Length: 477
Ligand code: ADP
Image 1 (cartoon, rainbow, N blue to C red):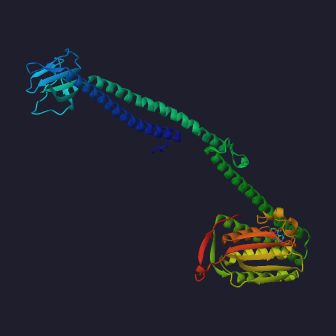
Image 2: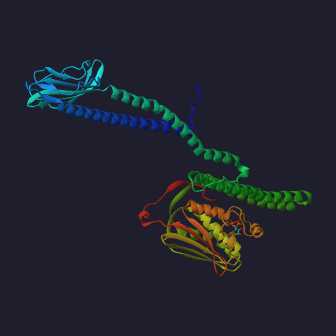
């Protein structure tokens, strides 16, 4: 089996890239330096040759016999040679007899002063050759200097550059590695701190020494994630505890009813009554479990919506028609006031449930013989459903949590009226799944107004009959 390849650590990769980039830069820099120095040295050499040439010209003189002669001392510098030839090629002067520099190939006419590099006897020479006129007689003059010293100097520079470069790269690489280590150390620290924060220590946070640097900002983001996780965990714990509690109550009632019936019911009628009561509780339990299942499907995003264009007024009227009987039982009046031209694109059944839960609550929590207003209108390009009741209202401190699962303002009253504490959670999910929002406000005269806002079907989509089947995500259930 092949062992998996492990990418080197960031530290090593950073150091590698740094060393490679540095090497490239240094090679370019060293090459440029070397070329510039060589050019400068050659220019200096050429200047010296020019001086030699001019000095040599000054030491030539014409003899009474119309010849040209050297008037200076003969100098024997083997690296600095002066040659003078007459126009017919006869050597008039050579400063260092031992050099093996070749003679200049003479041509007719004057030679334009020119620099050459030549190799003689295994040595490189730089020469300046030209024609000079001494007292009317043309001579060919050549000043030559050995390039040996220059070559040695350049070689030394090259050695320093070539040997120094790897040393610099290794030292810089080592420094880079240490720096990368230091720079990345806070990340290691963050990782070990994050490892410490387990599910049961979610309240802990990473320490952020400097919240404004890169690490600090990332740590803050991780801390925010932990905060969200903690709140999700809390919600989940609360939900599990609440769900268990909700399930236990009807179970205990069923058990109690059964036990009492076993001990005390003697007649068939008494047994039937007990069984009827138990079945009622079983129905309640089944309803609760169904709702919980729907909520969990909503969470998982596995509920498919069939969204179509619907007349919102009609939809709301249908809902209230099915609930009017409950209102009548309490002597309440449902006052329906809907605009007929408000169209929305929604899943009818899902939205019906939301409206139904809210109107049902309005009836449930309002006193007898009051009026409940249900309004549908378009406002600021939105379709708005408002259900206004004259109930006890929702205290401000509970308004945030009213849509949470199992949340009840008055536990006893809600349970006693058959409430599960899930109605508004379902309503919120149903509205949000249809692209809308739900909110609650207090009515100054007492009571509450629940407002559902949905995107209004625009004229562009008016002729189109939307029939899209969508999967809808969980939202905040
Ligand atoms: P429940 O099944 O208890 O009615 P809901 O989720 O529908 O659960 O409502 C949550 C809680 O909000 C209720 O227990 C009740 O305390 C409060 N509530 C809901 N609607 C109203 C209303 N119209 N007026 C006053 N309180 C309300």
